[in-house]
Amino acid sequence: MPAATSKSDLLAATEAEFAKLANLIDRVPDDLAYIKDAEDTSIKDVIAHRAHWIDLFFGWYTDGRAGKDVHFPARGYKWNDLKRYNAALRAQQSGLSWQEANVLLTEQYTRLSRFIQASSDAELYAAPMKGAKNNWTAGRWAEAAGASHFRSASKYIRTRLKDVP
Image 1 (tube, rainbow, N blue to C red):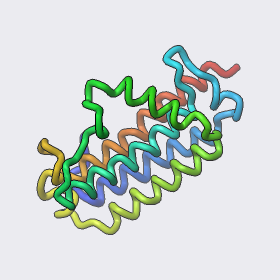
Image 2 (cartoon, rainbow, N blue to C red):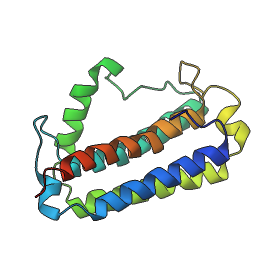
Image 3 (cartoon, rainbow, N blue to C red):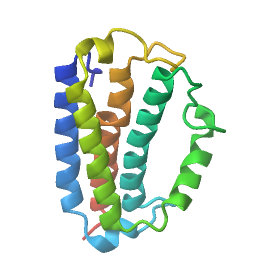
């Protein structure tokens, strides 16, 4: 699916992908949400992870606009450290319940949607996001943290639901 290039396309993609994910989440039995796969990841972990990455996006965006150093993906980590980062995140979020993970995701989705609605096309797509150290716009980063992550979470949940008799 091509990346959005306008505010209206970004909002539509974000809303559509979240709606698909929310529909799948409603079909997940509570006990399945906690069962780890071969990679030591559960559906609950994936949902909490997606909420966290929206929060990371807002940190990057805010730091960049303030002229601060932006740490991608986070301070002390490089992109090639994602497995280590995600393992640390799973450990940090291990005490979250399935319900709490869902609430967190919904709150972050709402925050992201409001941000997109309040932003102009120019703010989202006219120039690279400040501090990003690449050519991605704020809109492209927002899509990566939102719609793209919702899409991959949906794919993961569909695969895990196939294991349910």
